[in-house]
Amino acid sequence: MTSPVTSSTPPKVEDLVKKALKEALDKRKVAASELPVTMKEEEVTEECGVETTVSAKVELKDSQSWFSDVTGIKVDDKEDFPVTVFADHKWDERIESFIPTINKDYVIEKDLATNILRAWELNEKVLCFGPTGAGKSSLIEQLCARTSRPFVRVNCTGDMDSSMIFGQLTAKDGSTHWVDGAVTEAVRYGAVFAWDEWDVTPPEISMGLQWLLEDDGKLFLKEMPGSTTDKQIIPHEHFRIVAIGNTQGQGDESGAHAGTNVQNSATLDRFGTAVYVDYLRPDIEEKMIKNKFKDINAKAVKELVKLANLIRTGYKASQFSLTMSPRALFSICRKVEAGCSLKQSFALVYLNKLNDTQRKVADELYTKVYGKNA
Image 1 (tube, one colour):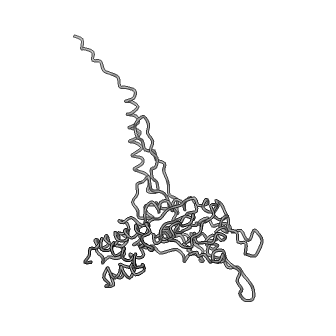
Image 2 (cartoon, rainbow, N blue to C red):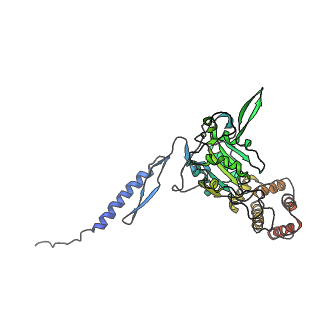
Image 3 (spheres, rainbow, N blue to C red):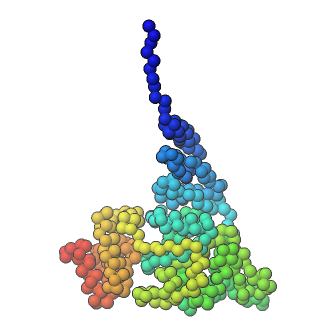
């Protein structure tokens, strides 16, 4: 007797394709897991409905570390990127001492650090602006500390002289010689120049930096003796410039930042990256205070940050002529640790600086947070 013939349905072509893609994906995943720590995956594509990961093999150079390692911030592999670190770099002795010390209590905000460090990797000029006491200068200083970059900071004023940043001729031993200013030294030897309070700089001085702010620009020292070639300073490859201020150079309509100037639009156009630095998120600010003042309990810190943010909101609404910065919170905490009451510390640091009307409003906010008997 003959056995019956069993018919079978041949596999569909699309099933075979999906199976082949799955096998390829599995092989790629195994290969990716074996990548050295100096490499990371970074591109995702989709083929025939099957998600596949393509390894771009981003490799660190000798002088680079991952953003997550430099800042201590946990990020996904897709967000991580190489950052140049100068731990073993031999800086010129004129600027080596300007490398800041890492403040372990300082909490770095991820997005701000990402945008600024990426800009430095791209050799872009950075504009960093925001309210008083938001920590703009501290942020740049601590990013320099973590990347071992010299940090040369100049606080500008409306009556400043150009010699402060460019340099000047001085007399010594019966002859004259040129002494570099702060920006000139930073340009020559590769420091980060923090152009602090940049929006109060007289526009005629700001215009002296126009060429330097361009891509592949140079610094021209018109007052320095010598030929035109001598007066042109080609920036060191590691030189970076960050303009720091309360405004983005468009003037101040609030009246809170006296002396700020409207900067030339050509100057503004030369900044490849502009970041707004607001006050820290409450959880980050609380963490920073707790890191610095171990003896103050978490509840007290939380309430203090809440009070500060109520005052900041009032400041933005023009209820107060003075905001409350993290610097003020640190001062309050220092007084509390030294034995002052919280209310007395608040009065000494903030309340006594206000007029009568504003003081009553601030008192009401204090009562709202701490109650009538505090």
